[in-house]
Image (cartoon, rainbow, N blue to C red; front, side, top):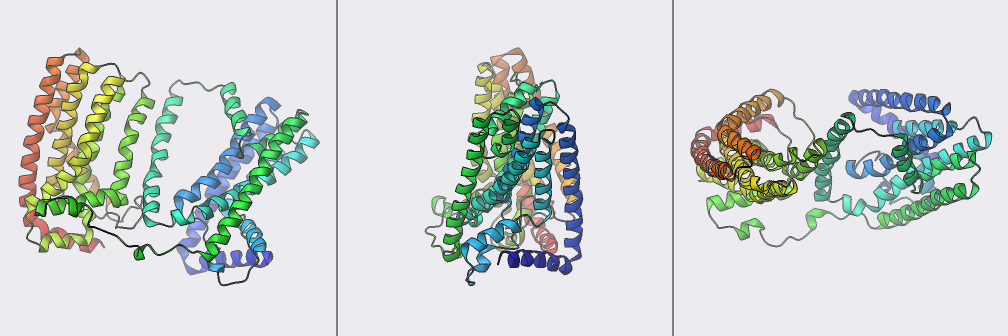
Length: 519
């Protein structure tokens, strides 16, 4: 049965390549990418094998740990990687559970990621070739590490299937997946700008990982090379114990999943009308309720909202002295205020309800503005006041609040006009928030650059006043910034809603025609 499952996996992969030429292209790209990563790992391990044992152990543990962690984490946020042998497809077949587990585990090695991981694992074990006993244990540890990666990955994904199978959870995880990507650049920039990482720091991290299931298999040969049998036994016990636990969790989760497939979310009963029950039964209230529902449930909006809480951390990483942290409020205000610039495009074909119903353009604009403002106002107030207090500059609170409010209100006003004139292809509801639609680049880039430039020019007075107030520590300039920011922002918002509403009434049918042409 195990051999049959392996042949089935190979057959499914071959048939997939015959079905579409693009899958062949994707496989070639994946193979080239995997070979590049494999060459880097293998060449690095060859060079490492000639280094001192004190350097070999931490580097081998770090590289091996990263591989195991990637296998455990990536399938959870990509929900759908390597589904050619989905266990749910074996529900109607009397396959023994043990054979199914072994077959699925070995099938995990069949494919580009599995082969690359297996070869990389062996290269880590061969690092210890100068000590025959350490070499044997290194190869055994590599096999254990590979098994931990595959079995642990299957255990986590199978156990999390009832939760990850829900569409809302998948959408939230897709949005949150971008957060680590946002942090990579600042962290690399921070380390490359003068933060030195010594071998002691690397060894400290490796020693900590060696006591986890991610790094324990790769630490065993170093213990054997040092003839520290007690430490080797401890690391082997951790690796084998967690491997057995992961196999048990996988077996239990698989047994449960085979007889309790995920239920259909469409059959779930929902009560009430959500925001439509809480807001007034007016055109503005209806649009506001619909937009608030989008902000809560649509992953395209959730992605923009997920970025905002990361802003203060990124600024802190870039400037540990704290000066850049003062920009958290204005940047969050810009992101949330400008976030409605693509609202009409995000409506998709549902925008016909706005065109067909007797909803004025001004009511449409106010509904979208109020929904974004309700989310943005408390956030920017918290960021502006919090950043001033954290940097020991309480006198800058009024200036930062004035600047943040001015940018938020101005952004909402300018976006209300831009979205009434320009629509471009965007991700459709249910699609990945990271997907880019063909033809979106030019229109999106042009409208965004023009809108950003207009927002910057209009906000220039409060920007200049805020800079002067913060640098001088002047309360009077801070209050002047607050007055100017509120006054100018409210004026731009009122004008933007007024003229944007008129433009929407004129251009509504044309915008709808363009949106339908994109789909």
